[in-house]
Amino acid sequence: MEEKEIFTGAIEAEKSVLGAILQSDDIRDELISSLEIDDFSDARNKNVFQAINNLMTLGNNIDVPNLVSQLDTAMKVLDKIGGVNYLFEIVETYIGDTNAYHHLRIVKDASLARRLIKTMQGCIDGFKKEKIKDVSQYVAECENKILQVTQARRVAEFVTASETVGKVIGKLKITKNNEQEGPRANKYCVGLTSGYESLDRLTQGWQKGNFIIVGARPSVGKTALSLNLILNAALQSRKTVAFFSLEMDAESICRRLVSTAAKINSTALATGNLSADDWLALEVASKDLRATKIYIDDTSSQKLNDIRTKCKKLKASHPDLSAVFIDYLGLITTNVKLGEVSKSVEVGEISRSLKALARELEVPIICLCQLSRSNEKGSRLPILSDLRDSGSIEQDADQVLFIHRDDYQKQVKTGEGQPQQPAVQESEGPFDVAKPTKIIVAKNRNGKTGQVDLHFLMNIGKFVEIETRGEEY
Image (cartoon, rainbow, N blue to C red):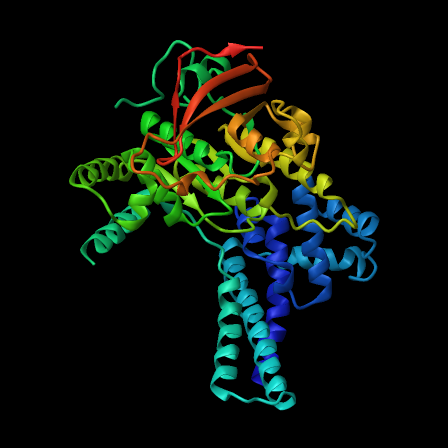
C-alpha cells in the first residue's frame, strides 16, 4: 500500500534527522526545537531523541560517547535500541543540512498524518459506540478535535511590537466608530539602563551576561514592571529587546504598552472611550512604539529548548539584541524525563540553563518569578528564601529584585483576598490609583543591595520614581 511506503520512508527520515542532530552544529538546535518525542514513530528513535534532549538540557555535548552513556547508564535502553551499532547507523545517514531539512518535513508530515488518523478513528469509533442524538453537534465536535491536532503543532515565532501595535490601534479606532544610540547617559549606569536612576544607582544597569530575577506575589505588578523596563530599554537604547510572554498574548501586551506609553487609563483604552487629547497621545505613543525593536513571543507553556533556539536565532539576525525578558519562570517546561524529579530540581535546571544562555548571548536575561505564600505572613519584606520552587534560583541569579507593596500585604493579612490585576482598575484618570511600591535589590553579585521607592500608577500600568536616590541596606 502507498500509505505503508510513506510511513516506512518516515522511519528512515527519522534516522536521517537524528544523524543531522549528531553531526551538524549549524542546525542542531533548530532541529531539536522543531521536534517532539511523539513525532518519532520508531521506539528506538524516540529513545535516542529523548537522550539528546536530556544531554542538551544538562548542558552536555551532543555526541556519540555522551549519547551512549545517557542511553546505557541513565535510561538503561541501549541494548533495546540495538546498541552502539544502531547509533553508528544513524550517524551514517547524515549527508548534509539540506537533506536534513527535507527529511524533517517528512517526519513532521508523517507525525501529523498519524495524529489525524488516530483522531478520525476515534470519531468513527465514537459514532459506532455512542448513541448520537444530535449528528450536527457530533460532527462539530469531531471537526474541533481535528482542528486541535493542527493547532497543537503551532509553535509561535516572534512578532514585532510594531506590527501588533498597529492591530491594537486599528481595533481601537473601530471601537470608537461603532535619540541617541545607546542607553540613556547617567553617571550610575554602565549597562543597559532600567530607566530609573535610583535603581541604576544600585545595579549600574543591566549587565551583559547577567541572569536577573524579579520576584513578587501574584497581582503585585511583576508584568507591569517588566513592560516598563522593556519600554525604557527599547525607547532609550534604540536596540532590540525580546519578550517571552507565557501568560498573555501579544495583542494584550501591546495594549498595555500603549496605555503606559500614552498615559491613558487602561479602562478607557479597552472600551475606546477616549477624548480628543487621548487620541492625540495615542498617536504619539503608537508612533514611538512602532519605531522600537521589541520582539514578542507569546507561546504558552514555552519549552526551555525553544527559548534557547529562538534567542540564538534572534541574536544572529539582530546582533544589537540588548536584553531578553521572560514572564515567567514557573511556566517554562523541559523535555527531560530522568525519572521522578521534583519541581525544584526541574526549576533548578531551567535557572542554570538561562544563566548559561545569558552568558553565551552576552545579554542580560530578566526573568519574572513567583514568590511562595510564606511571603504573605506578617508584614515583612520579601527575602531570598521566598523564591518559589528552588533555592538554586538564588544561587544562579546575578541579581534578585523583589516588588513589595504594603497595601497588598495588608489586604491579604486582613483576609480580603488578593487584589485585582493592576491593569484593570477602574478610575476616571490615569494618575489617581498610585500605589507606593518598593523595588528591593536583595542580591547583587557585582554591586550594592538596597531598595528604591516608586509609585505604581495602576490605571496606566506605569512605575515612576518618587526620588532619584536608592537607599542601601
